[in-house]
Image (tube, rainbow, N blue to C red; front, side, top):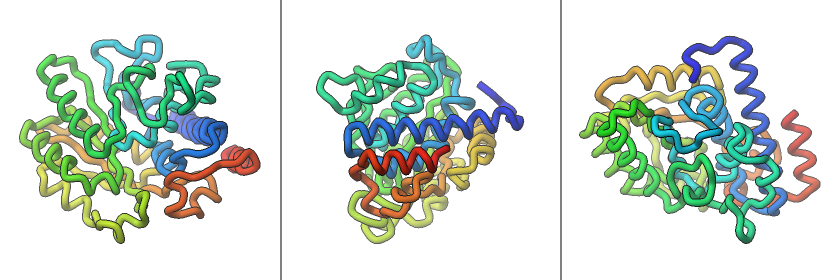
Amino acid sequence: MTTNLDILDINNIINASKEIRKLTVECIAHLGVGHIGGCLSIADLLAVLYYSAMNIDPKDPNKIDRDRLIVSKGHAGPAVYAALASRGYFDKSELKTLNKINTNLPSHCDMNKTPGIDMTTGSLGQGFSCAVGIAIASKLKQDGAYIFSIIGDGESQEGQIWEAAMYSAHKKLDNLIAFTDNNKFQIDGETREVNSVDNLFDKWLSFGWDVHQIDGHNILQIFETVNKAKKTKNQPSMIILDTIKGKGISFVENAGVSNHNMKISQEQLEIALKELI
C-alpha cells in the first residue's frame, strides 16, 4: 500500500488503468454485449485502488486484515474482474468466460464464485448497506481495514443508499470510504432527467459525511483524496468522482445513454484497442 506517488508510480497506475479498460472491452466483446459504459468510467479508480491504495494480497484473497472493496453498482463487474485478473487473482484467459455457463465470472459480482470479490452485488442500493455492515464488523474486530465502496449516481436515487448513509455517519465509521461514479447517465437516460441527484456534495455533507468532489479520471487526484479520507476521524468519507460514461473509447463515449449496456463487435473491439494504446 503506497502513501506517496512518484512519476514511476503514476505511470504504473496509468498503464494499469489502460490494461483494465482493454481487458474489460475484450471480455465484453467476447461475450458480445455488456455494461461497458459504467465499467469504463471507474477504470481509473480501480487502478488506484488495486495498484496502490488497498492493502490486499492476490495470493491470499481472504487474508484477515485486507481492505475490502464492495462495488454496489454490481453491473460494473466486468471492470472489477479485469482489475482482479490484471493484479493476478486469476488468469486473464478466464475473462473470456464472462457470463457463460459454469463461469466464475457472472455478469454481476458474486463473492461465492470469484476470488477477490468481497460481496455479492447487483440489486442497486444493497451493496452499499453491506459495506456499512462490513465496516462496523471491522471496527468491532479492530483489524485496521478500510472498507471501500463504489455506488452509481443513478443508484443514488435508491432510498436504501440514504438510510445507510445516515447510519454510517451515526456510527462514526471513519474506516468507510465510498465513491460515487457521477457519470450523469443511467439505463433510462440522463440522471438529471430521470430523477435528479444534483448537489450530491451538499446531500452527503448534510448526512454527516466528509465529502470531496474531484475529476474521476485524474489518477493523482484520486490517490491524494483517498489518502486524505484515510486520515479523517469520526466520519465516513464520500468521494464524488466526476466521470465520463464510456471513458477511453470514443464510440462508447459518443453512444451516450446507449452505452449502459451495448453490443461490441469484433470490428469495434479492434478500434477500441487501437485507441487504448
